Length: 150
Image (tube, rainbow, N blue to C red; front, side, top):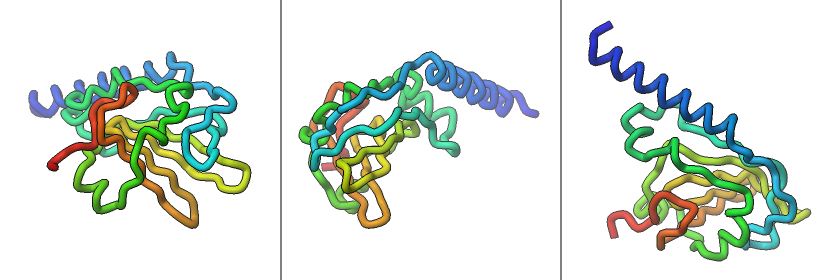
């Protein structure tokens, strides 16, 4: 293996180990009755921290994913501070970081899979619909705002 390729491989391994360590040391447990600020949806179960499988070491390092942490309590009322956007607008204004959290929310009638990206957007999705919420202003729980290219 060439020296440059070996160096990139080692960086990737180290970044993944740091990320896994932060997952294991992070208490991402489930806080009951966390209302996320839309249609009485409540967090159901724990949040899971994830990393895009195809993310390059450079993207991971550049986005500082290893330093981004989220606690379930951070989600209290979060969607009320965000704006529902169309997929076209989301694609135009939001960056996409390789780090995110997943979880489930429900109001007793409707349940969504939830994906929270460090780049200030949250996607709620079920078989019937997909809702995209973007934070156009910087919020403390995200790494950046969805205000690209305006």
